[in-house]
Image 1 (cartoon, helix red, strand yellow):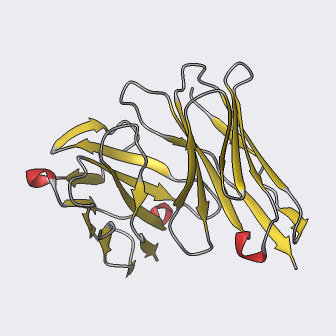
Image 2 (image 1 turned 30 degrees about the vertical axis):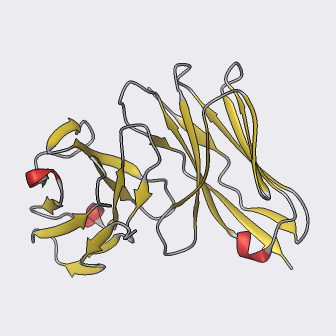
Length: 111
Length: 113
């Protein structure tokens, strides 16, 4: 069974710190990896996607992928209170198959 | 560029009633998805369309849920009859192609009493 695992949290970090969010997946053939942010009562919005091993940076966000360890992470530098949300990891096995979402990690940035 | 549109935004019904949700994807997006998100959980895919054909409906409770995407654009999701456990947010998403970034609509919050 294909699974995506995330720590549900809550994760609390002080403003200005680095927040580290982790995700593991079970399907070794997975090809595409996505991080979505979901504010309470809102729909998910894309933060980043990553396809290749290594790091991918976009502003304050860095996605890290390690396919050998079946692990993808999201780092948020200089965390702001506006980053407080639930972060969803999504994995696509490829071959036109569906995305699998994790349950999300709740992040609170304390001013 | 207009985003994914959904209606209604909120719906309250009694169990055993029927309900329908509508979704209009981003223009040009061939792939359309319906998700169910129960409070505290991640979205669960119900059905995926590629144009007007079904790609994956393995997690759709077919005894009560149905969906269609006529003409490969708008889509409707129907529940008949509704159960208490169907209370959730129903999210519609679209993408240009399969495996590409999905963009979500605002969702429909369903409460079944």
